Image 1 (cartoon, helix red, strand yellow):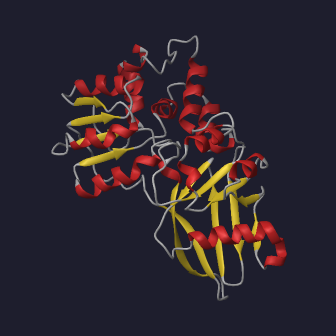
Image 2 (image 1 turned 180 degrees about the vertical axis):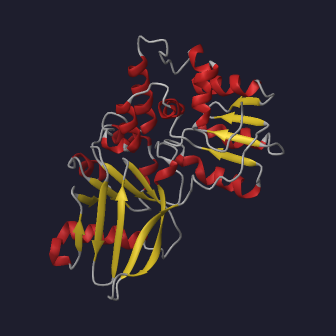
Image 3 (image 1 turned 120 degrees about the vertical axis):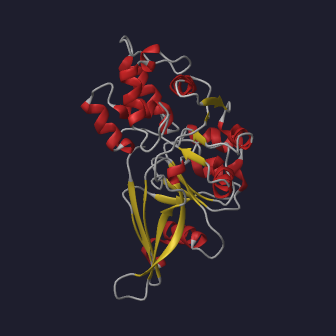
Length: 321
């Protein structure tokens, strides 16, 4: 399944309006914020339709996945949006993670816990807030909002240390461009190691670069650090490959169109995360050219002055070259 899906669900008292963009969406929040009410309304409409007094508008089926028979239920759905309420322990299991890889469905998961087995984006972590009354009716209008904003960076960032999530091409690139200014570059060796790596340099000006497309499960811990240490900056592009594609070095109108609306092109049955799609896209489009991309070892062409400058130009307000 690919594409964006707008969902509107309402009864006489309450209405929810939101849009699902990727295969995994997380809804967080404390009690009494409307999360369970949303799930209950989806369930009731699925079971009783219009007789429930609920109206649901979406171009694909919506249902609730829950209970001990969740695997049987999951196998019965294709190209649907499945909602999972907190308390369903299977969402943190390896088995569920593996089945998501084989599913054409989108998943909306209500949880206050991190789910390290699942590659979900920082951009798809939401809370629910009351946006007031809708129209002149006594109906509460609820909307989803991003828990982590990516557009709040102010001023120019000049780091002393760069910490990257991976140790492959992305790290090799930033190690090269950073060394020209005496910036120490470190690989954490995986997203689960970022927290520890950052703590070792908490007294310095640290720029953390990680794949936003799959970093979601680490954001509770990383968000905690950002609240305490103002000298730590988190930069989360979709992936390093996305940075290269976004820079325009391939000079492709088709790629520009893909980047404008990735969800229209990325089939979640083929790519569990956008990061994997962008890696495959860059590898395919550069194959056989002087920019041939290898995720494991960075092609020296990307370290060249003109190309590296274009890549760095995508990183607004960050000065590392």
